[in-house]
Length: 481
Image (cartoon, rainbow, N blue to C red; front, side):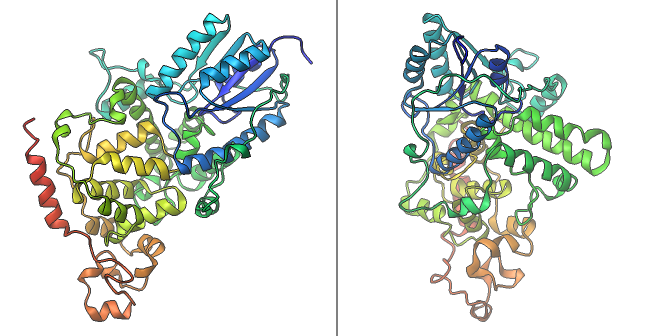
């Protein structure tokens, strides 16, 4: 066992070994390495995890621990305010260095700044790295020197600036620090038990670094060429579904960029697919760019005129939306997919979000909170940014008067009703013509399909045309603000 003090690698949303800058930097010191994960639910302004995220984190930490053990390392798990835990571990180990990969949420930035100051005062070197974004928020700015507020020019500038850094290589074996007493993963009770609602998550997802790399490889081999055409069709597995792996850092954005960019020179459909995938990857950076420069967007309207918008206080309507009982088949299919799998197709996220905010006129923050609890890819920057986009209250937002019609959206993006039939089996026998508007079918057609509106499937909770007019009228009252 080495007599040198260990270097602590503080894992957070970077639960991988490959291309992990902080872990690679620790390895380069030649010192014993102590991998540390802190379940921090106590630091002020650090948002507690939702239920689906807790489920994912449990399995991701299991995967990380197995990978670390393969490299000769023993992870240490602790629970509490990060600054307090680190102070205690530093004292116990006598370390002279702590490294980590940066997080960009406002609460995490404040916490990490305080931790660096605390470590400096204790004579401990602290170094942080970019392991989560293509380009960090402060490194990209407009020609006037400020942050970008619109995605397309941001994307053009990122495309000009970005060059993938060299792969951070890790030795097969690393010197291990003395094991530290801490918590067991099971003691954290991250998995639901009473009731165990995670059956759908277990059947839908494989979690961990290996699963992330396998998913990327499969998508590049089998999905890339069709990605631009199929990414909006919820009944097809046409997207990468890498978002939860990216959020927890089981795969890094540089890894995805390097792999996808290799297809750009091939031309044709695969090159177009690769460009579309890189653009979507950049949206994640853009949302973090906005959150960094405008941290209030996590909880407040970016466009202040929406502060006086008249949202409806309707807990019963919110509950129907959450349960997928609105009477609009595409909306209900999306909300049920979310509850069962912890995921929802991106096109359907826009439609269900528009329905909540504009048809029901319920505050986007209540939808964001539901997604935070139920999505396995719940990410503060993406979640808040996308909800404000739908609501029309954010930067580079869809205008409020763009109100998705759930019937025509269903007919366009799920024309045969395949997606609806999968998640709303009560309607599975309806003919294609009526699958997105069962209330318009004749009693004979409904009876033949065993559909009884108001009994085994709800009648529409609103008239979309009337709800649209109501929302537009409310919007007119704030346009001049």
